[in-house]
Image 1 (cartoon, rainbow, N blue to C red):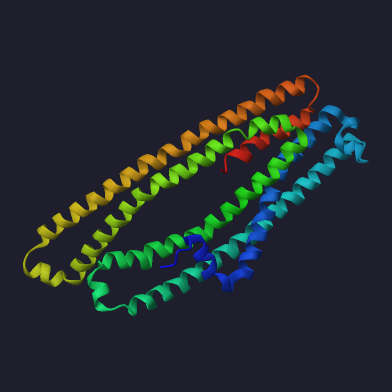
Image 2: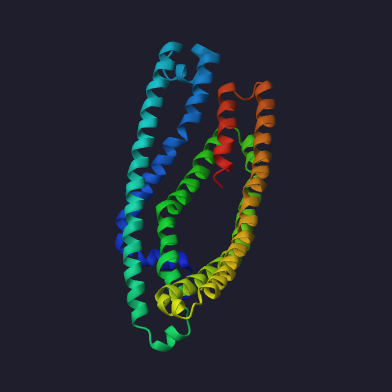
Length: 303
């Protein structure tokens, strides 16, 4: 077995589709950039209403407040249109790529399985093999369909929002990013804790699938020996094991979001208080403060 990590092996496997990956990634990044623009537009709108002829847009040559608002309205329409357009593009590209890779991987995996000797099959349950050919490959398809885009958009958010924070106020930026190490550490800890739990779920699913497959293929034998009640009891035991394994995973996964939300609260409160204090002191514009407040959750929550 290759010592390379699963992600590196996946990238190597998808090398023939590099052009599609690059184009889909480009659309995902542009979609997120347009998605992050509305808080900036809100800040500019607040700036226009409060400062009027002294606003940032006025310093760029659009002096009349009404014309400034019209310009912001046109920009809002264009930005939302571009965001929707690139969302459509990346959705089509990633989903088609996911379906193509799923198809190719299933064929390659099945071809590999067929080349194994009978001793290999004797050492493994049919349910485990079916879980690989179906569940595992379907999980990969779901990652390419949604997970790859999410990773790119989170990275884009951190870079763009971080740059905006530093440009407006490095002091507020410093306090806003305080929860990020906690969130990142918690995410990795959560993943490591969840992996063995979902491994047990997968093992339980494999054993149950093997029993169901054997019973269905041998139903005539089961009925001939009037063993329906016995087989039902066996299915009940394995199904209960599957439910118990899922309960352990659910208990941990359900606690993750509330705990991360509390870490986000620290960054949001810091932005609210420090940014508000700087605004009251006159060192931070009201429009800039509005941008920081809206951007804080956009920075922290996707993590």
